[in-house]
Amino acid sequence: MVLQIPGFLSHDQLAQFREALLAQSWQDGRLTAGHMATSAKNNLQLPPDNPVGKQLSDFVLNALGNSPRFLSAALPLKVVPPMFNRYEGGGTYGDHVDGAIRSVPGTPHRIRTDISATLFLSDPESYDGGELVVNDTFGERATKLNAGDMILYPGTSLHHVTRGVRLACFFWVQSLVRDDTQRTMLFELDSAIQQLNVDTPDNSAVLKLSGVYHNLLRQWSDT
Image (cartoon, rainbow, N blue to C red; front, side, top):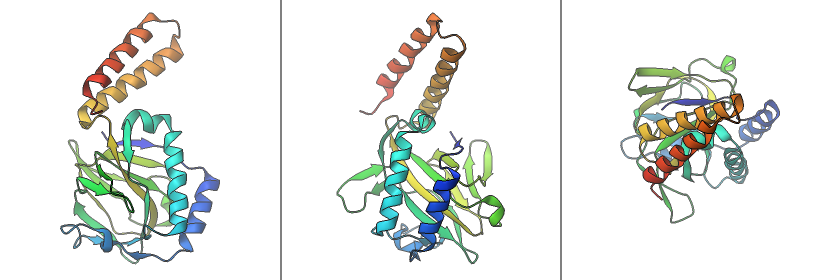
């Protein structure tokens, strides 16, 4: 499932993020790339130990916990602390699949990357190119979202970033349900239950469908 979450950050929050990030010192993104991705990656990345980056990362983590759409779609068990990258001067990131397991910096913990996420921080009118291009079952899908919008897509997807100039936040999620098809069905069922509860709050079907949802989650969950 490829899913957009609009308005994840407000206009004021975006301004604060951009001002803080543009004042930092960035490093070659290839320093954190896997062996196969090194030749494809040409961007800049904020060092994981940057104190400003850590503060912004914590802010995004807290916001994720308050996003019903993210929680419903991702069913998160663990989240790699969000990081930040910068594309400029013709920077790009060629076709690649994200590594299946990511280490959490500064800890012994490792996370399975079921879901990849990109939070756009630059206004689309401010740069040329810079699209995230994801290959899924329906073919190649190019995405260039408004600043503050987020996109979730399967970590198994082949994807790349076209040549351009932009700031973005990115991270990975280990879901309670590792199978993307099952997660999609649960998200659609949850969305339908919520809409039905709004339209006909006294409908007995809401309770029955909620039971089906939780029993499926119980059956498919890894924990």
